[in-house]
Length: 349
Image (tube, rainbow, N blue to C red; front, side, top):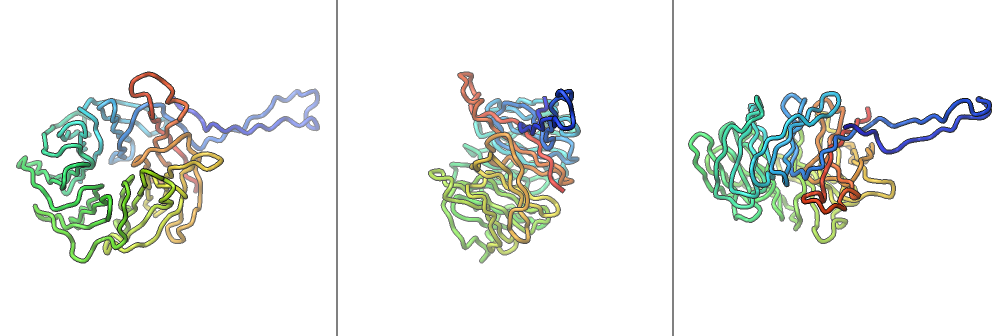
């Protein structure tokens, strides 16, 4: 079901123009967003290869959701996976999705052609955190608790421990480079061979101690964007940080006065940041100009935002975010607290 933005401007009919109040009040509604009510606890979100569908990991209900975003948003299908899907990545050929299950030591491969489980396999990691394709036939998987990342070969079914710090993973597949944002630094690795190696003299010189909310690379592969938070005080870190993907040198920050929950970058380098805190007028996604690093637009959303869960479509027409209305959390029903709905916001020209 679609809901219009919950702000309505009322213009009373003028008595000078209409006698005896013949003309009823006129309501002007802002039509710049709509909402698909899901009521789910989403852990990751992915745009499909043709831009027609969004795929959402439903963490508490152990499933993968397929949402049509052409025209009116609609939940098309739900696929039961296993215990607590936490992260996913699409294969380089865009035919499959690999999903890491935090609640069990298992990875599930989904065929996008018929939206079904193609295969699944066990790995040695516990409490999985992130998963990416290093190439068509090899996965990199990180854990929240185990000491290092593993590589899994989909052909040989062999698992290899890698000398890579655990954290949020990005792979630049053209150059066979992996980036890792750990709780203390950003590092760059060569993953072209079976055993990853740290790129010499290329490591984030600006160390930190923080939780990683989101870590992405720009569509042109030139810039990394990092959302950090301090679990004890989310106002202490007030910006999203950018790094040069080649050298890991610091290239700028995007200030939103609270921890960034997520960041998305369009093909023409428009940057959209989802903050943690609301201002006095509500919660807004903030658009930044990539050159000036200054705010250019604000987009009102319908509730608190979810980490990792912000996407811009391929034509830079819409932002998709997961929003939580705090008023919905006062229920005794299992898994009802902190459930999220999908919001689509029209991007200003």
